[in-house]
Length: 173
Image (cartoon, rainbow, N blue to C red; front, side):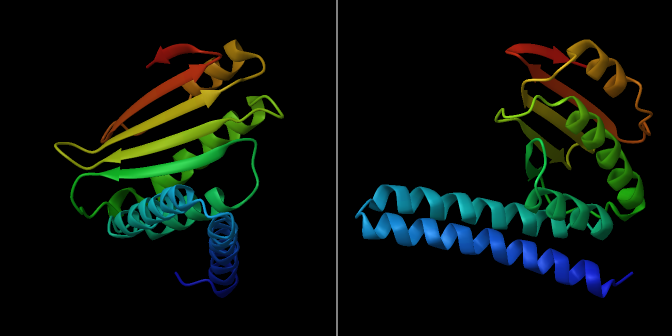
């Protein structure tokens, strides 16, 4: 369902992010650092391609949630990727959004402050739908965080693969 306020907020977030990228490009051009400019352009292009692929999965609520989350301030930065061809995942839209919301709430609660924490979500569309969730950074009370994440009830009609890299230790579920 179309929500005007949510749409405007999403557009404002996108505008802010891309203005920041343009300022970086302008600064590097002024400093004559063309390689840095190319890196930023490649990064922005990849982000836009992933946003496009996410939009083509027919999960508007989940896509809006992920994009808006990425553009707002949190204890970790969010990166998402879509691997595989376009697929209609509309039947999972609400469930995926709620699952991400629950996981992100736990990760945010236990993410160490003032650390470069990152969550990367990879949505594989073939051969079966798989969701990979990678955390890289530091957590306070790692054991409790892992227990909370493992308690999450995820619909097994798609395969949910979790990877936590916490304090350079890898835990795969």
